[in-house]
Amino acid sequence: MRLRAVLFDMDGTLLDTAPDFIAICQAMLAERGLPAIDDNLIRGVISGGARAMVATTFAMDPEAEGFEALRLEFLERYQRDCAVHSKLFDGMAELLADIEKGNLLWGVVTNKPLRFAEPIMQQLGLAERSALLICPDHVKNSKPDPEPLTLACTTLGLDPATVLFVGDDLRDIESGRDAGTRTAAVRYGYIHPEDNPNNWGADVVVDHPLELRKVIDSALCGC
Image (cartoon, rainbow, N blue to C red; front, side):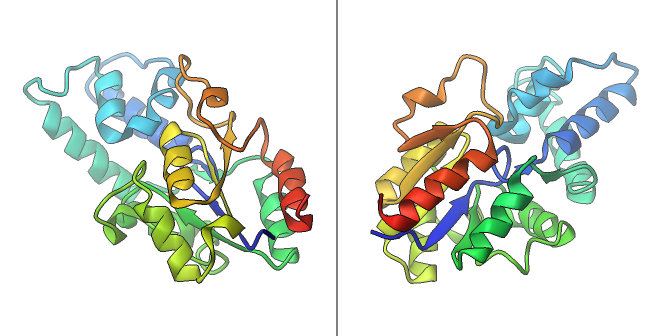
């Protein structure tokens, strides 16, 4: 069945949002007179959300006293500075241009709350180009549940089999697969060192956004 749309996870797939997360974590340490930590330690746990990043930054158990205050401070800072350094991954601008030239739809399905995701899309000039933005605010169950992808396909009026979902986490692949979409896992995203995208069961695994050109071309011709 011919491909009609390409949907992307946001953090670590469509956008490199790590620089903003890292800047906030390091600033919180510095303001407390604490030494900076290796940026890669933060980058490696981004998929775990604010809780994981704060826990790693402060080497702190999430159940420890004072943790929740740090998490809320992190979120407040991120609300204010969520699109200072974030940008499309290298090659993604060209890929999106190709998708649009091919008269395909593209959109975003993310576990990032709407209050963060929407401003980022707007500030990067992507909101008006994207066919949709599905966040946890729109569903009862987030990824890995298939509900977000099912909602996306329904909203676009498309058979899931005509949709490719691209993500950098097992949850993305599970969500897409269970919703009936085709799936692509990317190795360039925020993947824990002990994780291996080859084991997620995706239809294809790529190392760079532009490698998806061949995947999309193949799907367009039904090869």
